[in-house]
Amino acid sequence: MFVTISTTGTAVNPAADLGYLLHKHPDKVQTFSTSHGPAHVFYPEAGPERCTAALLLEVDTVALVRRGKGKGRGGAPDAALAQYVNDRPYAASSLLAVAVSNVFSSAMRGVCKARPELAAAPLPLRVEVPVLPARGGAALVRRLFEPLGWTVDVTPVPLDTAFPEWGDSRYVRLVLEAGTLTLAEALRHLYVLLPVLDDAKHYWVSADEVDKLLRAGEGWLPGHPEQKLITSRYLSRRWSLTRQAMERLELVRLAEADDSEVESIDNAVEEDTEAEEKPTPLAVQRREAILDALRESGAARVLDLGCGQGQLVQALLKDVRYTEIVGVDVSVRALTIASRRLKLDRMGERQASRVTLFQGSLAYTDKRLKSYDAAVLSEVIEHLDLPRLPALEYAVFGAARPRTVVVTTPNVEYNVRWETLPAGHVRHGDHRFEWTREEFRTWAATVAERHGYGVAFRPVGPDDPEVGPPTQMAVFTLETAHDEKEKEAKAA
Ligand code: SAH
Image (cartoon, rainbow, N blue to C red; front, side, top):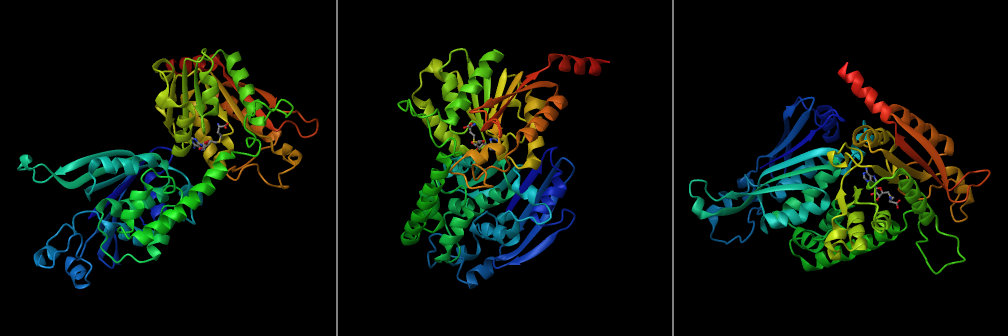
């Protein structure tokens, strides 16, 4: 049984990066012994543009039977031959998942001492499983992988190509592609979902399987639309374990929902229209400032990059001057909430034709972002690790190149004015950095210079004489002369 993992792209060095992340050298064939037989890791290709690592598990069916682990589904006592002659050596099952976790254990935990920033970064990934037993068929395969950000290509394998009239087997060929996941996330998806699709565990399910499931499911299983099916199948339908796991997942989901609802302390107070006396929440002031800048730019087709739960998209929809509004976010969960907020499924056709939400990562160039009038990055840049920021800069200012770009970010100097914020803390747990006014201006000026934009700064919220405003905003405007000059230079 066999699985391959590939990475491509120019932002990365595929061969070296995949080698580092998997802790397996691309020039070697390595063999590891697992309890089900030897597992080989090798690289069918390791070039500058594309690198593929393969894991091949040679299942020892005889040993499986001797250990009493080979019964699989059904396991009729008289099916003696079937114990030896079965799909185990060829089809990717729970045995392959176990091999993945044995052979790539550090990679699965996202540990890469030599290159920690690499392990934390999403990669362009392609996973291929040539033969996967899929109980539930292609439709279930999609329902399991698509919510996680994978593009899924699933082809049923015919029972016998010589006799097409026999129809399809219960196996599929699976190809998964994503640009928004880390390798660790990808491996953890496979570790859980391969056995779920196989639906027959080939080893004893013990109580610590619940821990293993929750560990591997961290960050994606809580709130997955098929959470219950995944949990129950993974735990071989042992109801007491399943119930235990579901309860723990629900606790995780509730805890997560709590902090995603509070994007930052200043967003915590959402619009409260009756609160005349209360000062306007900063989130609302920020939205107004962004809308002002967009209106002045004359934009009609607008991107909201890192749109989160869709508050700005909703405000833009109310103004007919915006003919096309696109919300992009890396988080499927945020997009689900946004789509609920906008009531996309109940919207009239005219209205619906003005708005699109899609999943994407701003750390990669994306053709879908080209040729818009304006793009907004509202409270987004501080969510990227600093080493990833140049990739976003390039994707937005270098590749997508909208005429106007509005960027907002917290002003860290103002943090001393937040009564509820302990000294030295950032405003939200997921902020990777918060900048002073000076730092933001320097960054913005460099980006503008590099990509041929002009830039102006505006305060958002009360502009404190000492520490400045709580939110800082930069409005970038494309200097058309820049692109013209480039064109001329190219022509010459
Ligand atoms: N723009 C919204 C949400 C800000 S929260 C507002 O102003 O309220 C930051 C958002 O950026 C989150 O929804 C997060 O999922 C998204 N994000 C973070 N990194 C991203 C990336 N690399 N690509 C796309 N979106 C990203």
